[in-house]
Amino acid sequence: MWPLFCAAFAAGDPLDAQTNLTVAADGSAEFSSVQEAVMAVPAGSSSNPVILHIKPGVYKELIYVQREKRFFHFMGEDPARTVITCDLYAGLPGRDGKPIGTFHTPSTTIDADDFTAENVTFENSAGPKGQALAIRIDGDRAAFRNCRFLGWQDTILANRGRQYFTNCFVAGHVDFIFGAATVFFENCRIQCLRDGYITAASTPESQPFGFVFSNCAIGGETQAVKTYLGRPWRLNASTIFLNTEMSAVVRPEGWHNWRNPQAEKTARYAEFNSRGPGANPKARVPWSRQLSKSEADAITVQKVLGGADGWDPAR
Image (cartoon, rainbow, N blue to C red; front, side):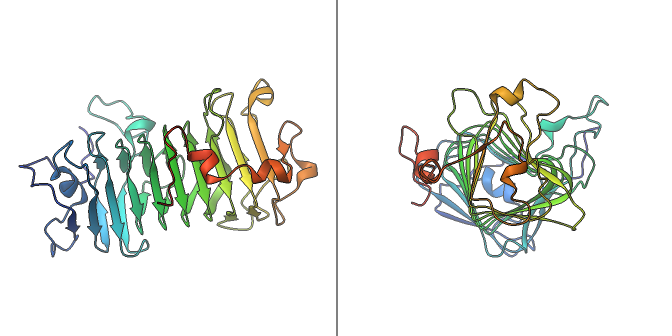
């Protein structure tokens, strides 16, 4: 049988479009389920922002914001006390008795464009059981502010579109930030729980940027943890670290070719002004780059995320 570990809610009669909705796990608000509130907004009707106020609590459910529901804002009060979680993992048997696979594991899936979240934790609580996504993002122009992303393997799947993370905390150990999207991480904390790889980009060859980390910090759960900055899920993976504090958890060589020498000719891995005991430009693999100051200065939020529509996530 399909696992029933997470609460599931069907759409009832949709409410009239509203600007503000409130969710409280203890039943003190109009909704006790995040997904119930999402489903209450008619598809295609949210031309104005829908602000979903999420009160502190643990919401163990699968969240899906469908493509037709743009301009959703998840607004928590405290990320440490406002947790959206579930515990699906790739090896879990599905209805047919076969493992459900990586892409059926996200606790939260964002298909819609123009999604934002603030002061919320997105978690997959399965533990170190293989691939188990906390969040999958397929929408364009998504922004996350002061949020936490907790998992082990494959915590964040930034699958497509453009995304912006600022003042966020991301934890995991294997490929825990991965995908083909263009993403800018600013002032974020990256926590490595065990030996592994931080990123696994699958950036298309035609896409100038994949993952950019600016003024971030990389730490480990213990001093014994060792990690690579990234390995290429696809040959043209693009990952850049700018002005990032790197603890000793970062391996001297920095990058891994995923046992594919061809990737050394095509992967786009670069750093500028890495600091701390994990910053070791002379020991980095020769097929990665150390950027000049002028090159690094040109890699701004607007340059990376602006696109044809001039998106500015600060607005």
